[in-house]
Length: 172
Length: 105
Image 1 (cartoon, chains in turn blue, red):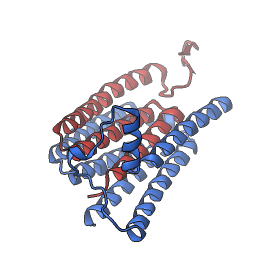
Image 2: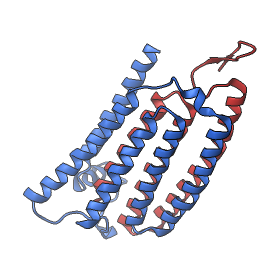
Image 3: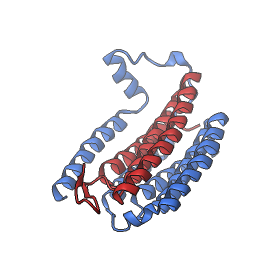
Image 4: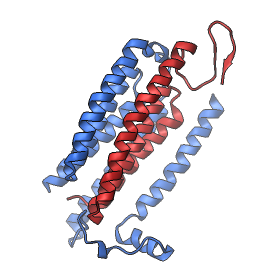
């Protein structure tokens, strides 16, 4: 349970900062939120017991990218060019994504409370997985690991992004 | 540990936010950050499945995605800075050159 709480805190932070990254008015704020997103992702790597990736993410991305961003933003004054550009659409898309994650968390909690039984964990033996090469096995894989809602959400999101893009282009 | 579907939902949410940023923001820098978010989503997916299958290949490829993000941001920011010095603009929309009046494509 502590693992799951830490995961949900890191995941919620990651999504929140990602939304703020694409919806901030200035590049400097956006880059700061981007670095916070990367930090939350580094925490998820650490939680997945990958200290090498955690260190790589922390050192390479946070240090190098922060230095490059500060150099690029401060030296070339790129913020001046972005003062007037702002749109509510990325924020709306991010909020939709966050709502999807909250629905997933709520369904998990409800399943644990009302449907007791063995939960699928990340560490499962390889033999427990069907081969994803055949169509029937793919369906079985999706059904076994409760991924059908994810596939439907992915399809709906793809259609939604294409629709929003078309609307955006028409108005522009 | 959380189930694999939680990691996939997180990865999906980051992918969606990244695609939305690429599709809807005009600033090249925000587009760059959005592409990095998409690569991060791929890294989380790779790492989760590496743990699921107890296979080190996923971790290796996740390390590659981190290297790609670093290289992409360093190179692309240099290109964007060069674009800004020439066109005084970092928007992906067509813009007129401040001196010659020609349209940048």
